[in-house]
Length: 511
Image (cartoon, rainbow, N blue to C red; front, side, top):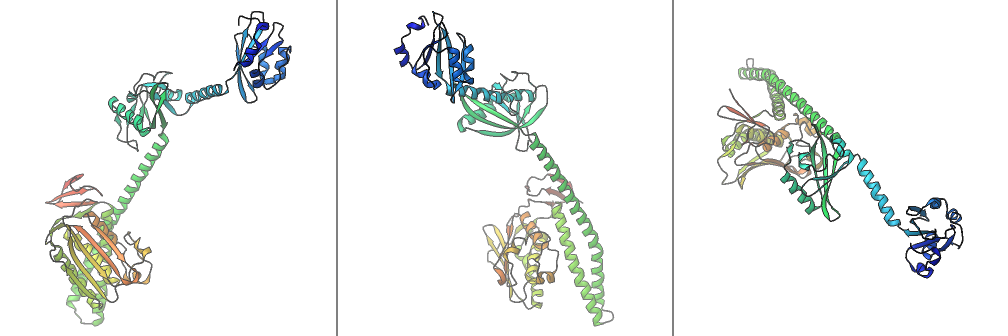
């Protein structure tokens, strides 16, 4: 300012948008324009001493007493942040230039706070350009990756990452070209999240969940990268995986125990059944009571053998050692064989047994005839057990390369609540009819498992007490992909549950 305070044009100062407050050489107020009076929200009488004025403005403005030419100070007044700059004038006076920079000053403070937050955050934060070169890394990021301050700047992010799946397995190095492609997707789509391993300087690594989003910094489009340390979740995943493996191992051990025990029980039981049949053939004394007892022994032994066989099959399914021998079979011939015995049993109970086969049914399909017969036996066994009167109808149809067996009965039916659990292992309805029928509750479970093993399905339709309809659908060429061992030409091929029969995981020569 090259004019003395006394020569300042007051009328011009009143029209300026900037606050002006002029003090004479004796430190008394010469004038203050309207902007200053409004900003400080107080009258400013002429000739008031500067010190007295400052005291009247309040404690927050006390520092203005010491404000020297060339210095600036921010003072809070009535919720505003006023920036005051002191300038010297030739006659020894002092000029205050006062401006309301509240918005700018608050923004500066916010930016400084955010910068401090990023610098000291416990989240790794990086800024990379569209080539993947790191432009900024906060203190936490550098410390966790064993870098000195500023040591990560200029390094390509591809050098620090290994991609992986959500469980942090199958890790792969990242090529710079792949990273550039990923960053281009971020620019296009706006956000990207993925799991990765971040490498440490000098060795080591840790699991992170990475988030990327584009951001315009000045005139340049950059990528903001946040890498959340996911080590704790990884520990939980590993613990869960270990617990699952232990549970599966225990389940396999249980299934193996059941298989061995069932096999050991079946051997002496078969001997009992054999001797019982010999005694029945001899009928040495002709005593009706003896004949009755022998028949009871035979019936009970066969019932027990059926339960043991079910438990043995269940254990084989659970331990993935079920034997499958697919050959070309005639489905109608298998159905005839099964129907013959069940028709006789149904007739004994006064139940009509009807069998139908649609014309054009193929005479050949690839399947295991023993397992097909087992499925039909299970379904017909239930139909005979739970039908007291009426009829049982068996139908064989062929539709779109699918063979469909339908077993319909006029029995007690199955309620909706029971249908949900019917195909579960060891489940039985808690009613008198079911208890009288006996069994281990494994027949339908095994039936469905076998059907799915061949690429088919077992379904049920029942409308309460009016009977039940079971449908067994199998592809004409059964695709054995499940927990089974397929035997062809003396070679056992083990196929994992839900696997592909064309891609065996292990093979061994059978005896």
